[in-house]
Each structure stands twice: as C-alpha cells, then as structure tokens.
Image 1 (cartoon, rainbow, N blue to C red):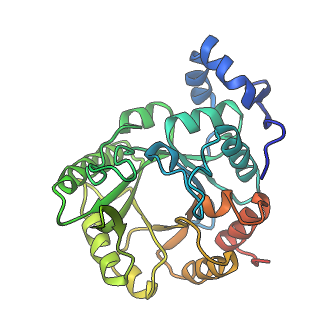
Image 2 (image 1 turned 180 degrees about the vertical axis):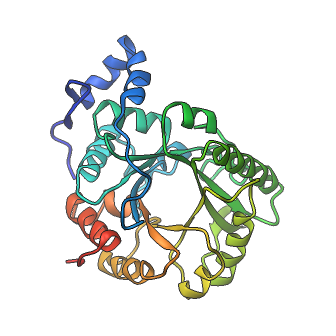
Length: 308
C-alpha cells in the first residue's frame, strides 16, 4: 500500500492531515488533552457482545516486521493511513495502541465513537537481553482513566527460567487491580515463553496456552473487568474451557494464505468465551495491500456475515 497523500479526516472542527500533526504538537500540545476530553464515547461492546479491535502497539516494542519484511511498519505516515482506513470500515469497534499512535489518531478524528485501549508495557524490547522483564513504559491506569480510554492491555510472557518474569507478573497484577478499581477493561495477553538460541519464543501448543490462561486469570485483586487476549492454537475448544473470562483472539505475525487464517478465526469465533479479535499486521498489511477488504472480512466474521 503506497502512501501518495496523507490521510485527511474531518476531526477537531477542521481537516487535519498527517502532515499537520507535528505542527499541532509544536504549537498546540494542549489540543491533545482537549480532544480526549471532548471525544465521543460508546459502550465497550454492542448488542452482540462482540468486538473487533485493530492492534497498533507493535512499533513501541521495536517490532516493525511483517511477513519477514523487517521495516514494514517503520513509516508512521503509512501506518496511520492504514489505521485510518481500517477504523473507517463498518464493524471495526476500535483500536489498541500506545500514546503516540492514539494521540495521532485522535487528532486525525479517527477515534470518535470508537473503543480505545491503551497498551501499557512496551519495555520488553524485541530481541533485548531484558525482553522478559517487560516494564510498564507507556500508559498507566490513572492516565487511561483521565483521558477517557476504555481499558489497558498488558503483554504477560511467562518464562520459568527467566527471573524477569516475576517483575512482569507483579506489574501486570498491579495494573489489573488499578484498572478494576476504575471499572476499566484489563486486557491480559499471556504466553508461556522460552529462550531458544537467545530469542524469546512463545509456546503455542494447547497445554502451554492453558497453563498461561490460569496464571493470567489469577492476576490482580479483582477479575471483574479482566479480558484475555489469546492466540489461535490447536484444540481451541479444550483451551477455552480453561476460563470463564471473555477472550479476544490475536492475529500475530501473519503467515501463509490469508484465507486459511480467516477460516481459523471463523471456527474459533463459534466458541462462547471468544468475543472477538484483536488483529494488527494481518489486517493492516495484507499481501494484496487492500486494507479495507481484509478488515471487512474480519468484521463479517466477528459481527456476523460471510467472509467473501
């Protein structure tokens, strides 16, 4: 998808384009807080109890690759164009992102009437020696509440051989508690992980996923507002029997034929605890470059309809 013109969206009373964002940040930084205060809100879920979120928090962890292209997400103007396209499609409920991305989308007018989930821990940089000591370096629960966001997400990788895991677990538990106190969604994304050749690898077999679910579900002083974000794995019916928490399925780094991916999502969405999808790269960077078409298929799967 080639960016020829920056997206222009009728937000904040006048057309705001990507090219305007730096000037606004230089001359009118207070405009961001004012726009959050004035943002049009909606319920977390609609009548069908389902949700499709677009994920845009990968860059803050240094994860810029898609399908082997290591710098696919390096251009902020290109990423914003894709996000604005995705958020403008029917059936897309909102977005998950870090403050820099969400503030940009807010100024572009793309978050009106959308769910906005703040990504909280991005300190476990991809490939770092400290990757599993995943510090909370982005949103706090207090800031999420102050800006009127709808919840916070935390990546919670569990490596039994890495002492950094316990700090991540403690911080995640604190975030779950603080979000629950404010009656805001706590989206926990757990994995059992190992280091293989110096690289962190998430274990995507059913039993490892089940164990991660039980650990994640027990985090925090209340589970009333906890949701899970889980991968699509084999034996998903058995995996989802491990929890009563509402769950959104993640897309991950897309591999193989997109139609196979869509089919696996469709089967998974039939399970009662599965309430939707949180997908980034698979929708924002489809092989044919047609973001709108990819998003429309996912929206049809989540909210009813056929995947053409």
